[in-house]
Image 1 (cartoon, rainbow, N blue to C red):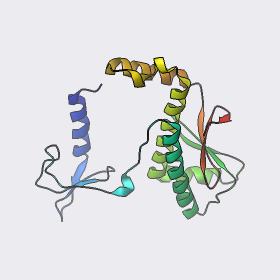
Image 2 (tube, rainbow, N blue to C red):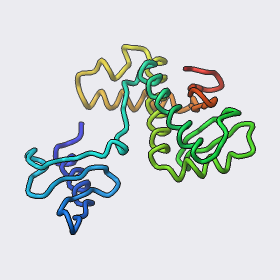
Image 3 (cartoon, rainbow, N blue to C red):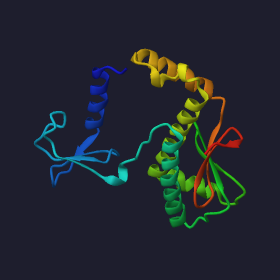
Length: 194
């Protein structure tokens, strides 16, 4: 479990990235989507906070149902963003995500353009990353003996250790998101998982 001091440092970093608008006096965190009015203390809950809904990502439980709901949202976002860039919805695009970035593959001639659009849209890129991360965790949970699952652990340190073990064992299963123009499916290894 993270210490409150670490959480306070993260919060301070978020607030310190803020800049003040000279005309309104409002403070806006760079890239956070959070705007506060002056004269209040965010920690005390007395500051007015406005969050730009475009910067909010929905999270879901690491279950098939949670991943399915994220996949519906992702399909709509892919349709909107790629469609507005003039890219065709078909043939399907397979998205893989690794430490070097988000990669598109498929039987298409416009894959470089797809990758460029995704890289240029931070919200879409984050949606792809979140969906893949939750799918990885949900798939790993399904493959893990319930007695070895972190979900049943009451000790936070042991829960983290079990989570790390579970995810380390699962790293050998490559996950991919496949958009067919109308829906997103999830592949685990070479098989469709969802």
